[in-house]
Picture 1 (cartoon, rainbow, N blue to C red):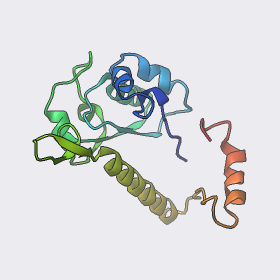
Picture 2 (cartoon, one colour):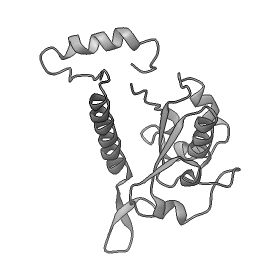
Picture 3 (cartoon, rainbow, N blue to C red):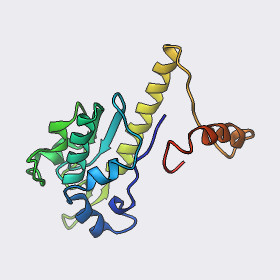
Picture 4 (cartoon, one colour):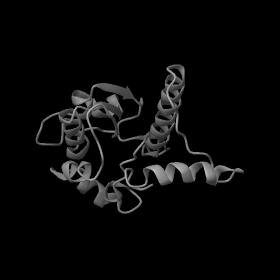
Length: 178
């Protein structure tokens, strides 16, 4: 099962400048993680292009304290280009159990314009593709090991709503946002 931790205040669509300030706030990771049913043995996938701010680093440290396996989805090029920006003095790739390098650029933008400025952030697209690839491979491995695989169906195909209702009924109280 997947339980997405989607903190509105950290998302750019609400406030780009506000999300930056929130991501640098010490102690916020504890407040966020306390709202989710995490336990020892879970996997915590943390995506942060720079991996240098307080929330992703503290989230990784908290996950490890709780016995979770922490996977960092980050740009090593970007993260190594600047020092940690948190009181722990560490970057996400330095505290995670497994690091997946998105191969992103410093600053995330990857297309240079004629005047030298860059545009075209790639971390969201790369991160989404990598996360989906991880989920697919985990599903393949689960089936290979004879495990029951519970997956949602598209609500826009015949029978999709009925399939999904079973999972919603079973897990609504356990997975926030379901």
